[in-house]
Structures are given as C-alpha cells and as structure tokens.
Image 1 (cartoon, rainbow, N blue to C red):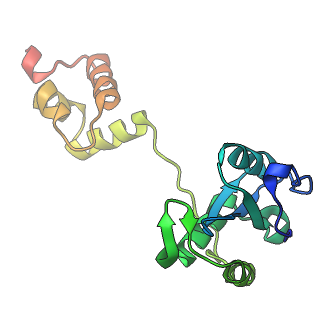
Image 2 (cartoon, rainbow, N blue to C red):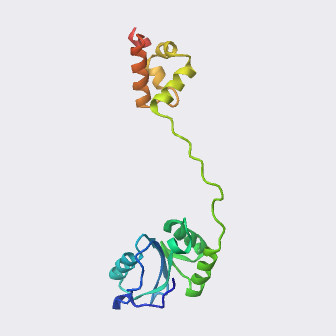
Image 3 (cartoon, one colour):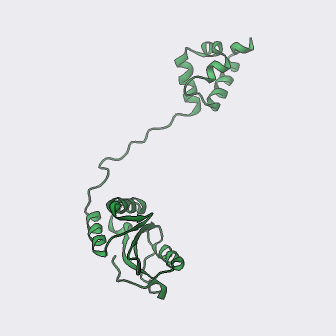
Length: 181
C-alpha cells in the first residue's frame, strides 16, 4: 500500500491500516527516512508523529500480512535495514529517496524465500532423562555414589536439578555417597 505524502500533524492518516507491517516515514526538513515495523501500523505511526518535532510524511506502508504470507514484520524490517545499511544515518533513520524505497519494496516482494524446508524441532530431554543418561554413562548408581557428591556435581552437564535427581536415586537405591560413608 503506497500513500501520497501525508502531513501527519494535520491528522490525515485515516487510511493507515491497523494491520502488521513496515512503515517508511520521512522527515520533511531533514529528508531522512525512518524504517520501522509494528503489529498495528496506525497506532505506531500516530505515536511517532505525536512525539516528533518535525512534519513527517508517509513515503510507503507495507502490509506484510497481505503482501507476503508467512512473514513477520520484524523479518521484513530487518531485510530493509540490511538493504540500506550503507545509507544508515542513525538507528532506524536512513538517507534514502522515496524512489529507492519503492524499488526496494518491489525487490522484497519478489525475493526468494529464506527457507525452503521446514525446521525440524527435536524434543528437549527432561532433567530425569538427562540424569538417567549421565548415570548410565558413568556406569550405574553405584559408580555415581562412589564419585561422591562433589565428584558428580563437577561432571559436565550436571545442573542443580540433575544433581538433586541423582541424589534422590542414590538414596532410593539404598546407597550412600562416598563422602557420607
């Protein structure tokens, strides 16, 4: 969605959507463009314009929900920040022309997807599963008990919860730690 240059201080931003997207706001005197993102474009643009001493013009608004499915506003914003990295003035302010922004929006729309295959999520083992694996690796509960509390606690991958779980298993098996004997 491209809007003509609107003076936000006059309240002419009624056509700004309340959807997620990326905004491109231009300072009328400094001629720099702020590239940012929001889940509610209308409220974010109003917030920025209300606290900005200069008149702001809307160069472009990119609704990511309608324009490119399955894309987060922050991903799109990051893409534009990288695209104009050499023209960055400070933070989210860039020294770019409206024409460069429109070219970048067109390039963003036809860019190849970042991922072609979905990520495979692996389950995270529980504390009990990690402790059981570590006990098996060390040679059983008797071997763990013979290490002593400090010896077991210094092993790689033993956190506080794993230590307490192992201590419970040692005591439940009727064993004593080396330093308790």
